[in-house]
Length: 228
Image 1 (cartoon, rainbow, N blue to C red):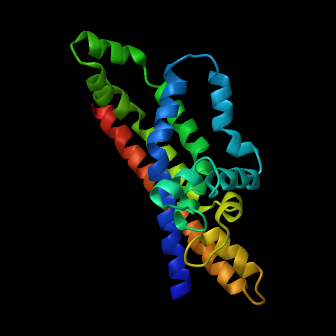
Image 2 (cartoon, helix red, strand yellow):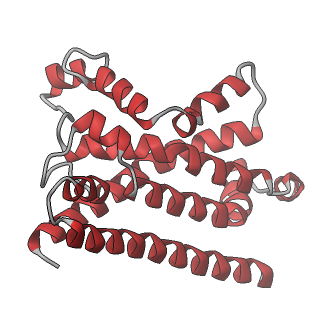
């Protein structure tokens, strides 16, 4: 592994990790809202959350470009008030990756929350447990395998994000060039096939390792809950 490839891998892990961690509370809140509440516009909200799955990623990147541009509704205040810009930076790449991963995370978590029998929560409440204690001791442990699955899916999706990232923050080596963008750049170079093979192998290995770890943790959690 050359220093250039090592830099790409480190940046990809940073972007994927921050994207997943940043979207985790948002994804869980949205999953809980969709799974446990009924309100006007619920179907519309569900559709908006899943839009990144069906629209071209370039469109998502273009929207992010408009929103976070120096004169955009979010980018403008960030730059004027805090002197912060995410344009052409790894933070922007993490935002793009997180937005693309959000639908997968929400879907996995929502299905897991919906599978939890609410009668167990009600029984805990009748025995004196408060709302938060029932959530922490009943709902969260039972939904944990789905939450972990959502986290891993989000991380794997973040590692593979390309279209929205290159549209939003471009392909800047050492700053926004993650594994997919590095593969794309290597394909444009004469004789870059060897680098493409290395980067592709690393990408597949990282994603496979994440899925194996997720499955192991989910099985362990399932056995623990079965014993309890």
